[in-house]
Image 1: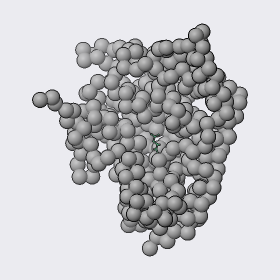
Image 2 (image 1 turned 30 degrees about the horizontal axis):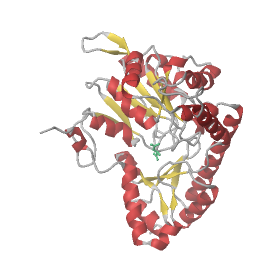
Image 3 (image 1 turned 45 degrees about the vertical axis):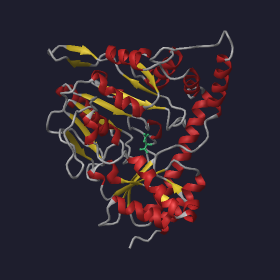
Image 4 (image 1 turned 180 degrees about the vertical axis):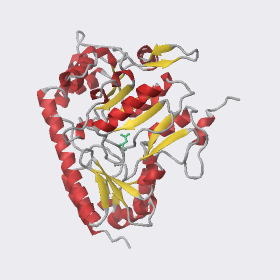
Amino acid sequence: MAHLNSHYLKLKAGYLFPEITRRVKAFTDANPDAAKRLIRCGIGDVTEPLPAAVREAMHKAVDELGSREGFRGYGPEQGYEFIRKAIAENDYRAKGLEVADDEIFVSDGSKCDCANILDILGDKNRIAVMDPVYPVYVDTNVMAGHTGAADDDGVYGGLVYLPCTAENGFMPDVPDEKVDIVYLCSPNNPTGAVATRERLENWVAYALKNDAILLYDAAYEAYITEPGIPHSIYEIPGARQCAIEFRSFSKNGGFTGTRCAFTVLPKDITARTSDGDRKPLHPLWNRRFSTKFNGVSYVTQRAAEALYSPAGKAEVAALVLHYMGNAKILREAVSGSGLTVFGGVNAPYIWVRGPQGKTSWEIFDHVLNEANVVITPGSGFGNAGEGYFRISAFNSRANAEEAARRLAALKWS
Ligand code: MLT
């Protein structure tokens, strides 16, 4: 008999967002009238149309592929030179950060990259995650067999959880103990918090001292509005030796359905072999791409490249402004109702401390039943999220305003 990967059996419940979808469907099936009023502020999925610059680039690329001269089959697995260069140039070198074109690896999503990176890391690493945490970091480590079983609270043995609380601004400082891999996410999903330069300097110093690697998820970088907040981990001296950065076009260019993202893996990063030698990770990641991936479609890469044109940049700025306008409306409405809100200033997520004594899923049900608004229960992101809920600002303005009105009017007892 064939054997399955028994690590999957350790996973708790379903993945958060399908679980929310399941509960919402049960509610809308039972309440068809309420279903018509439903406003989704749960999963962080963009709502606004693709930028014109992107659509034009896609049409052009499709036409190219329709001619004998312009047709392309397999492309370079790591991404076409034109997009690797556009990314390295615009997101890094134009800002004085040293990143070479061939340190950019173009993929179909940051979620996949955050999971796939485990392929090139060993299985003896001590891994730290923020709590609350984007569930992908935890679940993929469970799947890879890097953890023990979960206890009754859903805490996996072997993982180091770094509590993110109102007291530490939802951004943990370095731990006292030694870990090998640390997932950091800033702007943070789910709390909307951002890491200050000083906090990141501490993390880079910690990583260099402890020979650790930082997995830095900056998928929401475009939403940083306050000056002085680092947009890239490579703004911190020494990060090229210890940090891998993940970025995405999902939330800035509206690519959640179109699919395109990238990893920056500097050639300076090394890790240990089982013999104790030191080897660079870049060739391993390169090899992984060549072996397990055939690249993002040409049309999509041309679409992503268009986000760096002057017209594309202006449209991205307008999209970010739109969603951050929603964030302000939602944030003010919920704060005005007497609840304590965090985030929503440098991120499209508002993190709300629920009324005393209510669990996150109780809040989820209450908001769904009474306001017909879908939010995300904080506990779905980890134990430290219990009692909180997350509101996504990805919506039309009309929906954000209506959701704000309903949330402000909600009675909690
Ligand atoms: C979220 O709602 O947390 C995001 O949509 C998840 C993701 O980007 O995968």
